[in-house]
Image (cartoon, rainbow, N blue to C red; front, side, top):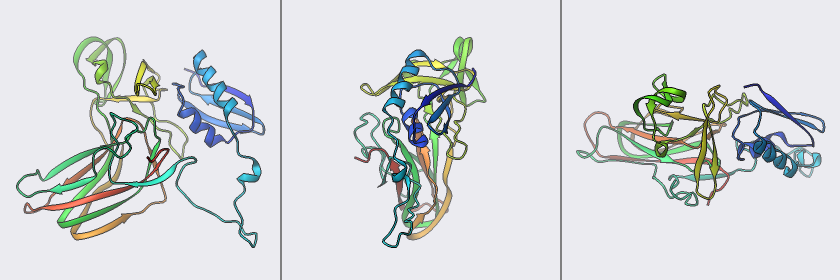
Length: 311
Protein backbone atom coordinates (compact mmCIF):
# COMPACT_ATOMS: atom_id res chain seq x y z
CA UNK A 1 0.00 0.00 0.00
CA UNK A 2 1.26 3.49 -0.92
CA UNK A 3 1.60 6.33 1.58
CA UNK A 4 -1.24 8.82 1.17
CA UNK A 5 -1.35 12.55 1.95
CA UNK A 6 -4.40 14.50 3.15
CA UNK A 7 -3.97 18.27 3.04
CA UNK A 8 -5.94 20.90 4.96
CA UNK A 9 -5.75 24.66 5.37
CA UNK A 10 -5.62 25.17 9.12
CA UNK A 11 -3.21 26.21 11.86
CA UNK A 12 -2.66 23.15 14.06
CA UNK A 13 -0.71 21.92 17.04
CA UNK A 14 0.90 18.91 15.32
CA UNK A 15 1.57 16.84 18.45
CA UNK A 16 -1.93 17.46 19.81
CA UNK A 17 -3.50 16.63 16.42
CA UNK A 18 -1.46 13.41 16.25
CA UNK A 19 -2.85 12.31 19.65
CA UNK A 20 -6.40 13.10 18.52
CA UNK A 21 -5.99 11.00 15.34
CA UNK A 22 -4.36 8.07 17.16
CA UNK A 23 -7.19 7.93 19.71
CA UNK A 24 -9.89 7.98 17.00
CA UNK A 25 -11.58 5.14 15.12
CA UNK A 26 -9.25 5.52 12.10
CA UNK A 27 -7.73 2.07 11.61
CA UNK A 28 -4.86 2.83 9.21
CA UNK A 29 -1.53 3.82 10.74
CA UNK A 30 -0.61 7.49 10.82
CA UNK A 31 2.83 8.08 9.31
CA UNK A 32 3.61 11.71 10.15
CA UNK A 33 2.21 15.27 10.17
CA UNK A 34 3.93 18.14 8.37
CA UNK A 35 2.97 21.81 8.82
CA UNK A 36 3.77 24.54 6.29
CA UNK A 37 2.38 27.77 7.67
CA UNK A 38 -1.40 27.50 7.52
CA UNK A 39 -1.18 24.25 5.51
CA UNK A 40 -1.06 20.89 7.28
CA UNK A 41 -0.18 17.64 5.52
CA UNK A 42 -1.35 14.46 7.24
CA UNK A 43 0.36 11.35 5.87
CA UNK A 44 -0.97 7.84 6.37
CA UNK A 45 0.73 4.60 5.38
CA UNK A 46 -2.27 3.75 3.20
CA UNK A 47 -5.33 5.48 1.77
CA UNK A 48 -8.23 5.84 4.18
CA UNK A 49 -11.60 4.24 3.55
CA UNK A 50 -14.45 6.75 2.97
CA UNK A 51 -15.63 6.50 6.59
CA UNK A 52 -12.05 7.01 7.80
CA UNK A 53 -11.73 10.15 5.66
CA UNK A 54 -14.99 11.44 7.15
CA UNK A 55 -13.61 10.91 10.67
CA UNK A 56 -10.35 12.68 9.73
CA UNK A 57 -12.26 15.66 8.32
CA UNK A 58 -14.20 15.94 11.55
CA UNK A 59 -11.07 15.69 13.71
CA UNK A 60 -9.35 18.48 11.77
CA UNK A 61 -12.48 20.65 11.79
CA UNK A 62 -12.84 20.33 15.58
CA UNK A 63 -9.11 20.65 16.32
CA UNK A 64 -8.26 23.56 18.61
CA UNK A 65 -4.81 25.10 18.21
CA UNK A 66 -3.22 27.12 21.00
CA UNK A 67 -2.56 30.75 19.90
CA UNK A 68 1.11 31.64 19.44
CA UNK A 69 1.06 33.97 22.45
CA UNK A 70 0.13 31.02 24.68
CA UNK A 71 2.98 28.97 23.22
CA UNK A 72 5.56 31.32 24.70
CA UNK A 73 7.14 30.15 27.95
CA UNK A 74 5.79 31.94 31.03
CA UNK A 75 7.94 34.72 32.51
CA UNK A 76 8.73 35.78 36.06
CA UNK A 77 8.58 39.31 37.47
CA UNK A 78 11.99 40.13 35.96
CA UNK A 79 10.80 38.99 32.50
CA UNK A 80 12.98 35.87 32.54
CA UNK A 81 11.43 32.74 30.95
CA UNK A 82 10.19 30.14 33.43
CA UNK A 83 11.15 26.73 32.08
CA UNK A 84 9.22 23.65 33.20
CA UNK A 85 10.76 20.33 32.14
CA UNK A 86 8.47 17.30 32.06
CA UNK A 87 8.22 13.91 30.40
CA UNK A 88 4.41 14.17 30.54
CA UNK A 89 2.79 14.27 27.07
CA UNK A 90 0.29 17.02 26.34
CA UNK A 91 -3.10 16.45 27.97
CA UNK A 92 -2.05 13.71 30.42
CA UNK A 93 -1.88 13.80 34.22
CA UNK A 94 0.85 12.37 36.45
CA UNK A 95 -0.26 9.77 38.99
CA UNK A 96 1.38 7.22 41.30
CA UNK A 97 0.04 3.71 41.76
CA UNK A 98 0.83 0.26 43.12
CA UNK A 99 -2.15 -1.37 41.45
CA UNK A 100 -3.33 -2.06 37.90
CA UNK A 101 -6.81 -1.63 36.39
CA UNK A 102 -9.71 -4.06 36.20
CA UNK A 103 -9.94 -4.76 32.45
CA UNK A 104 -13.48 -6.11 32.83
CA UNK A 105 -14.59 -2.62 33.90
CA UNK A 106 -12.75 0.23 32.11
CA UNK A 107 -14.07 2.72 34.67
CA UNK A 108 -12.37 0.84 37.52
CA UNK A 109 -9.00 2.58 37.49
CA UNK A 110 -6.72 0.98 40.09
CA UNK A 111 -9.04 -1.96 40.69
CA UNK A 112 -6.70 -4.62 39.34
CA UNK A 113 -3.68 -6.62 40.49
CA UNK A 114 -1.33 -5.22 43.17
CA UNK A 115 2.38 -4.76 42.41
CA UNK A 116 3.45 -6.85 45.36
CA UNK A 117 6.01 -9.57 46.04
CA UNK A 118 5.23 -11.69 49.10
CA UNK A 119 7.48 -14.73 49.03
CA UNK A 120 6.66 -17.14 51.87
CA UNK A 121 9.31 -19.71 52.74
CA UNK A 122 8.25 -23.25 51.91
CA UNK A 123 5.14 -22.18 49.98
CA UNK A 124 6.32 -20.31 46.86
CA UNK A 125 8.57 -21.11 43.92
CA UNK A 126 11.98 -19.42 43.80
CA UNK A 127 10.86 -17.56 40.65
CA UNK A 128 7.37 -16.09 40.55
CA UNK A 129 5.65 -13.65 38.16
CA UNK A 130 2.64 -11.36 38.50
CA UNK A 131 0.92 -9.59 35.60
CA UNK A 132 -0.45 -6.06 35.98
CA UNK A 133 -2.83 -4.72 33.33
CA UNK A 134 -3.83 -1.15 32.51
CA UNK A 135 -6.80 -0.10 30.39
CA UNK A 136 -4.78 1.77 27.77
CA UNK A 137 -7.29 1.74 24.89
CA UNK A 138 -9.67 4.12 26.65
CA UNK A 139 -7.06 5.70 28.91
CA UNK A 140 -3.67 6.52 27.36
CA UNK A 141 -0.97 5.43 29.80
CA UNK A 142 2.77 6.16 29.81
CA UNK A 143 5.25 4.69 32.31
CA UNK A 144 7.69 7.25 33.71
CA UNK A 145 9.52 6.29 36.92
CA UNK A 146 9.26 3.74 39.69
CA UNK A 147 9.97 3.08 43.36
CA UNK A 148 10.76 -0.23 45.06
CA UNK A 149 10.47 -0.96 48.80
CA UNK A 150 11.68 -4.29 50.19
CA UNK A 151 11.89 -6.13 53.49
CA UNK A 152 14.05 -9.06 54.74
CA UNK A 153 15.67 -9.64 51.33
CA UNK A 154 18.86 -11.72 51.09
CA UNK A 155 20.31 -10.61 47.75
CA UNK A 156 16.98 -11.42 46.11
CA UNK A 157 16.08 -9.91 42.75
CA UNK A 158 13.22 -8.18 40.94
CA UNK A 159 12.57 -7.63 37.24
CA UNK A 160 9.85 -5.60 35.53
CA UNK A 161 9.08 -5.81 31.83
CA UNK A 162 6.34 -5.04 29.34
CA UNK A 163 5.01 -8.12 27.52
CA UNK A 164 2.13 -8.73 25.09
CA UNK A 165 -1.13 -10.46 25.90
CA UNK A 166 -0.99 -13.85 24.15
CA UNK A 167 -3.58 -15.07 21.63
CA UNK A 168 -4.32 -18.78 22.05
CA UNK A 169 -3.98 -20.83 18.87
CA UNK A 170 -3.68 -24.41 17.64
CA UNK A 171 -2.28 -26.16 14.59
CA UNK A 172 -4.58 -26.45 11.58
CA UNK A 173 -4.73 -26.33 7.79
CA UNK A 174 -6.20 -23.96 5.21
CA UNK A 175 -6.85 -21.17 7.72
CA UNK A 176 -6.52 -17.37 7.64
CA UNK A 177 -3.65 -17.31 10.17
CA UNK A 178 0.04 -18.18 9.99
CA UNK A 179 2.82 -18.27 12.59
CA UNK A 180 5.87 -16.10 11.90
CA UNK A 181 9.11 -16.48 13.82
CA UNK A 182 7.38 -18.60 16.43
CA UNK A 183 5.91 -15.39 17.89
CA UNK A 184 3.67 -13.38 15.53
CA UNK A 185 0.27 -14.46 14.20
CA UNK A 186 0.05 -12.94 10.72
CA UNK A 187 -2.64 -13.02 8.02
CA UNK A 188 -2.92 -15.90 5.55
CA UNK A 189 -5.06 -16.13 2.42
CA UNK A 190 -6.81 -19.39 3.24
CA UNK A 191 -3.57 -21.36 3.25
CA UNK A 192 -2.63 -20.81 6.88
CA UNK A 193 -1.50 -23.34 9.46
CA UNK A 194 -2.98 -21.84 12.66
CA UNK A 195 -6.50 -22.01 14.05
CA UNK A 196 -7.53 -18.96 16.10
CA UNK A 197 -10.86 -18.70 17.88
CA UNK A 198 -12.17 -15.11 17.49
CA UNK A 199 -13.01 -15.05 21.21
CA UNK A 200 -9.33 -15.72 22.00
CA UNK A 201 -7.91 -12.84 19.94
CA UNK A 202 -5.80 -10.37 21.97
CA UNK A 203 -4.84 -7.35 19.91
CA UNK A 204 -1.64 -5.60 20.96
CA UNK A 205 -1.23 -1.99 19.86
CA UNK A 206 2.07 -0.94 18.31
CA UNK A 207 2.64 2.53 19.74
CA UNK A 208 4.43 5.37 17.94
CA UNK A 209 8.10 5.78 18.90
CA UNK A 210 8.80 9.20 20.40
CA UNK A 211 12.17 9.63 18.67
CA UNK A 212 11.32 8.40 15.16
CA UNK A 213 7.58 9.25 15.23
CA UNK A 214 7.12 5.91 13.46
CA UNK A 215 5.09 2.85 14.43
CA UNK A 216 6.53 -0.66 14.43
CA UNK A 217 4.98 -2.97 11.78
CA UNK A 218 1.48 -4.17 12.63
CA UNK A 219 -0.34 -6.88 10.70
CA UNK A 220 -3.92 -6.26 11.85
CA UNK A 221 -6.40 -3.39 12.01
CA UNK A 222 -9.66 -3.17 13.94
CA UNK A 223 -12.38 -0.81 15.11
CA UNK A 224 -13.21 -0.33 18.79
CA UNK A 225 -16.62 0.09 20.39
CA UNK A 226 -16.44 2.36 23.44
CA UNK A 227 -19.88 1.17 24.60
CA UNK A 228 -19.16 -2.57 24.62
CA UNK A 229 -15.41 -2.00 25.24
CA UNK A 230 -14.55 -4.52 22.53
CA UNK A 231 -12.84 -4.66 19.14
CA UNK A 232 -14.76 -5.50 16.00
CA UNK A 233 -14.14 -5.63 12.23
CA UNK A 234 -10.67 -7.13 12.71
CA UNK A 235 -9.04 -7.09 9.26
CA UNK A 236 -5.58 -8.12 7.99
CA UNK A 237 -2.85 -5.66 7.11
CA UNK A 238 -0.45 -7.99 5.26
CA UNK A 239 1.91 -5.16 4.27
CA UNK A 240 2.66 -4.49 7.94
CA UNK A 241 1.02 -1.05 7.91
CA UNK A 242 -1.56 -1.87 10.57
CA UNK A 243 -1.86 -0.71 14.16
CA UNK A 244 -2.10 -4.06 16.00
CA UNK A 245 -0.32 -7.39 16.25
CA UNK A 246 -1.30 -10.79 17.63
CA UNK A 247 1.31 -12.71 19.61
CA UNK A 248 1.37 -16.50 19.89
CA UNK A 249 4.10 -16.37 22.53
CA UNK A 250 5.21 -13.99 25.28
CA UNK A 251 8.32 -11.92 24.55
CA UNK A 252 9.71 -8.82 26.29
CA UNK A 253 8.63 -5.67 24.45
CA UNK A 254 10.48 -3.48 26.96
CA UNK A 255 12.62 -4.26 30.00
CA UNK A 256 12.06 -1.70 32.76
CA UNK A 257 14.08 -3.37 35.54
CA UNK A 258 16.47 -6.24 34.83
CA UNK A 259 17.09 -8.48 37.87
CA UNK A 260 17.91 -5.67 40.32
CA UNK A 261 19.33 -7.13 43.54
CA UNK A 262 18.27 -6.20 47.09
CA UNK A 263 19.42 -7.07 50.59
CA UNK A 264 17.98 -6.30 54.02
CA UNK A 265 15.18 -3.74 54.04
CA UNK A 266 15.12 -0.49 52.12
CA UNK A 267 13.64 1.86 49.54
CA UNK A 268 14.90 2.88 46.10
CA UNK A 269 13.77 5.43 43.52
CA UNK A 270 14.27 4.39 39.88
CA UNK A 271 14.74 7.78 38.27
CA UNK A 272 14.67 8.75 34.58
CA UNK A 273 13.82 11.72 32.40
CA UNK A 274 12.02 9.49 29.90
CA UNK A 275 8.58 7.99 29.62
CA UNK A 276 7.24 5.16 27.46
CA UNK A 277 3.68 4.69 26.21
CA UNK A 278 2.01 1.35 26.91
CA UNK A 279 -0.21 0.18 24.07
CA UNK A 280 -3.46 -1.65 24.68
CA UNK A 281 -2.82 -5.38 25.05
CA UNK A 282 0.56 -4.74 26.67
CA UNK A 283 1.01 -6.08 30.20
CA UNK A 284 3.45 -5.11 32.94
CA UNK A 285 5.17 -8.24 34.29
CA UNK A 286 6.67 -8.24 37.80
CA UNK A 287 9.02 -11.17 38.47
CA UNK A 288 10.77 -12.02 41.73
CA UNK A 289 13.77 -14.32 42.21
CA UNK A 290 14.51 -15.77 45.65
CA UNK A 291 18.22 -16.57 45.93
CA UNK A 292 20.15 -18.85 48.27
CA UNK A 293 18.37 -20.61 51.13
CA UNK A 294 14.59 -20.33 50.99
CA UNK A 295 13.36 -17.46 53.19
CA UNK A 296 10.39 -15.15 53.57
CA UNK A 297 10.74 -11.67 52.06
CA UNK A 298 8.54 -8.93 50.64
CA UNK A 299 8.70 -6.09 48.12
CA UNK A 300 6.30 -3.57 46.63
CA UNK A 301 6.48 -1.31 43.58
CA UNK A 302 5.07 2.16 42.94
CA UNK A 303 4.92 3.30 39.32
CA UNK A 304 4.81 6.92 38.20
CA UNK A 305 2.37 7.04 35.29
CA UNK A 306 1.18 9.73 32.90
CA UNK A 307 -2.50 8.99 32.19
CA UNK A 308 -5.46 10.58 30.46
CA UNK A 309 -7.71 9.61 33.38
CA UNK A 310 -6.55 8.92 36.93
CA UNK A 311 -9.87 8.24 38.68
